[in-house]
Image (cartoon, rainbow, N blue to C red; front, side, top):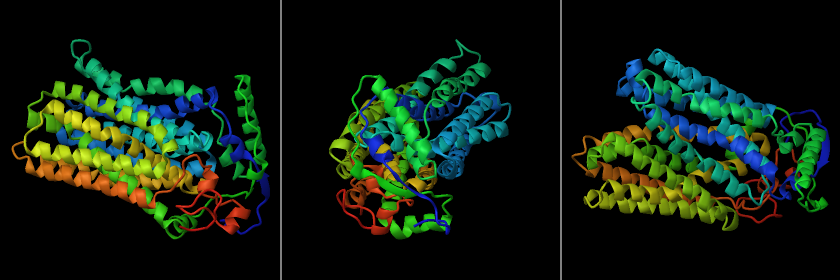
Length: 498
């Protein structure tokens, strides 16, 4: 299924088999830190902006502060779509260096803002950089990390968003303290935290190789082999033993160029409609729930429990820690218990716990502390499930489309989820009537439970399997003609479509 009419050259490759057999090493830790830190930066950014220390300096009212978040979101969507396609065409490394640079520029210049329009512009730019990171980096991580560890690593990295959010809450409490910094200075300094951290990442990323899997399918087979050779040398230098490669796992691929949009549409809607349905469902459901709770938790605490704004931020730190803990603790189970079971369990449990809290909230049984505990318990599971959404979308589509499909599904989820804060803000009102928000919580619970059921029925069994076994590349020669593994089959079976 080549997107070009000319006869492309073909070659036999053991790159996927060689990458997946590697033991865990310092090289893989470099990948985790160098590429995974992006989510910490995103969480940091969102929380610093949410603290709105800039509002008084720039003369912005509540609506304008909310608009700043909208511009950041739109920037993420644009960045994901734009950089995602380039990452599939030009390579992962080129784009994860460019996208980080765009983020650093946008965030730093936003800290120099003198008017709302200027702030919106550079928040959009910063969001574009982060959106590009989501597409290019998830692809690179899953293509480099061995299959045995892919699930837990991807989920843990995506979950570190909440570590960044907690860091942002702490940083805001320091930089927005007028006893330490002038009101017009502190918020500006806080916007430089991310760029300062990012500068160190640029240096580290320069030493991260291009994805050998991407090179393998783009006519750079010699570079791919040399890249794997170098990785193996690094690991042997640590004194680790590398198992012999199984020659029977070699695959034949043909060079592939730009993939037309018509081919992408056929892959998504004709060959893998079930997988497309699962990917979109996961992104939409987790985005809706997270945006609904994350952006309105302070309003709930303040309007229903008379919690002072300063104290509300302390509750948020506990909420962020609960999310981070869930991703770190449960991630390993996605590799041992399997994707379907864990996706079903995390989504459904998160929804059920939220549903219980909804009834207790309506009866007035909860206070600020106990309500936050329920949120922490629900999102302990939801965090792992939400992080697994990016893992799932990255695994279940062909390598040549990986970044693009992530960007498409991510954008759909972000745009749908963007409606949640406005909806739940209206349901909260002035805090005198609990019924509207109760039904909002019921809706959020049902959305998550439905997402879990869909994942349990239509999800793909990908734990411990090579990416090429889960989904054959478009450039695969023999297997592409015979067929690929269906969604519910074991490794070794073959069929082209869902």
